[in-house]
Length: 106
Image 1 (tube, rainbow, N blue to C red):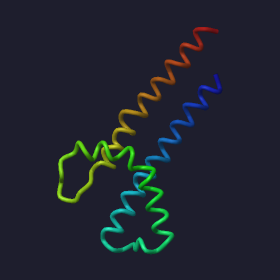
Image 2 (tube, helix red, strand yellow):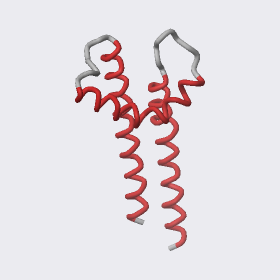
Image 3 (cartoon, one colour):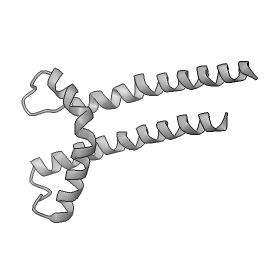
Image 4 (cartoon, helix red, strand yellow):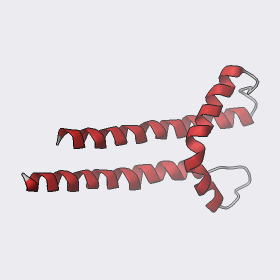
């Protein structure tokens, strides 16, 4: 039973970390586009590349579906909203179902 709670907690924490990666990626992308950060700086490039590689596989399918808003990318916001209002509640419900079925078996 503790293992199941641990697994669901781990998944929730990973989603929380991914949400922060999305936020940081959007901020860094904006700062780079306004010329505040220079990608020729090795440290800036490494962080932006890491965040791009982590978030892009999730954000790209959303970006393809959204209409072109003239340089405004709302796909990270859509992914954050999906995590907050769809995935986390489903994860919580699933945890309750699994724990309930495990309690019924005892």
